[in-house]
Amino acid sequence: MTVRLQTRAGLTRLFRYAFDYARKHGYPRVTLADKPNVLRYSGAFAKGILESVATDYPDIAYNIDNVDAVALWMIRRPERFGVIVAENMFGDILSDLGAGVMGGLGFAPSANIGDAGAYFEPVHGSAPAHVGQNKANPSAMFLSLALLLEHLGYHAQALAIEQAVAQVVKHDCQTYDSGGHATTRQCAAAIIERSVLNLRPLNPQTDNGRALPARSHA
Image (cartoon, rainbow, N blue to C red; front, top):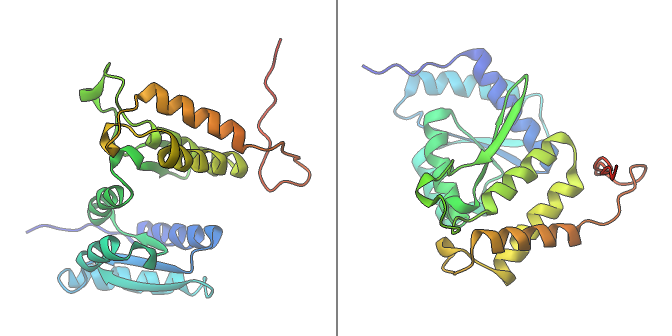
């Protein structure tokens, strides 16, 4: 027998973060990916907590879908989702599927958010098989940096990096995993250059992004 451990405090914290994220980023819906038709007791427990949390967010719709159906629709119509929330096992599976939908692990950033801190990294990890070959796709690293900047409140800078990655991949260079021949250094340099071009002078008094600290030339 396998036991699925869930706590009221943990699920409440998870669901509240999902609704807060949806509201902050303008997503109209939160979808809980679960398997309540099989995991009936824990599924009903999670459903009750989700419904309770949702009462504090009347502007955000919510629904519960079977995780296998979520996987299907992530492939066929990913735009139908706003925020997908899941406990660790199902979330781990769907996150790799999401990476595939967006082009592969080379494009997938991740954020680990805690009460006392947060850290950000590409989903692919250290990728030791590619060490020294100058072939790894740097996009996920830059997108993880964008998530970090967004978390710290540097919204304009985060957007500049996100746009730069999209522009470079579309127009300038692709690494081997995208069917191209560009090197890590070439793509990284192109993303940095585009990021700088995308940044306009920021006025902390009027811009909704925060200005980065001035670089010292001493």
